[in-house]
Figure 1: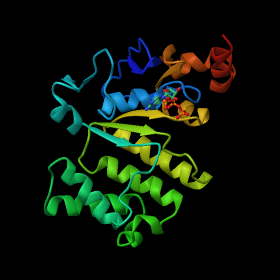
Figure 2: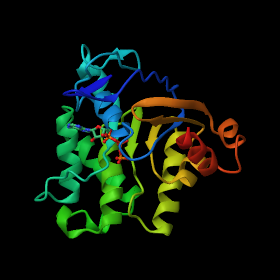
Figure 3: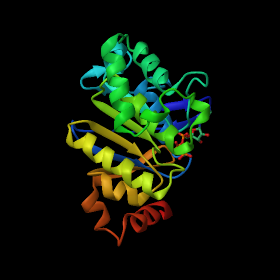
Length: 229
Ligand code: ATP
């Protein structure tokens, strides 16, 4: 549970994401998705409740728990004066990881996400789509086991969206657990094996995607129906 003053933003949310799963966390604007994510990664202190990440309590054992999680947040929060390569190297330092291996991993991620030719540029000099890719690379720099994506394809063109989907599928096939928040219901339908929907801070459904979609013609129908009640 998370309260901001008298306002309860998230209440009674119980979720279990299995290792290796591609999990979708959907809901309308203001439903409590980012608040939940912030509580998971320790950016917001929950008012009540318990969160365990691969068995580690995210408050009492925050060091271990934090190490397992990579977050690509909804809003870009890069240091504007760093080059793309340094964004990644500094992010690794935050987890206490330094040295040659980090530089190699940063270069590998820049290559994987098509950013090598821009590696020396400052973050302010790249496009929105490149920032999305950089955000994904940064979330992966410390080799997390859980990747949390808060609207990872917001504002990207159709080609890059397809490419991001391909990368995310690949990462999931490599064993990474993925927790995705998105307003693109088609994206969730295509990528996620299980979906939870939150409204007004409470979970209204949590099911395998196939079951959820079978309740209407598309995930969008089911979503809109749930929002009506
Ligand atoms: P969106 O899809 O628009 O990003 P969301 O589901 O991520 O929405 P949250 O950002 O979690 O929604 O917000 C949930 C509710 O909590 C909103 O009513 C918001 O105004 C409120 N809220 C979020 N952060 C704070 C804060 N720091 N102080 C007060 N209220 C907040």
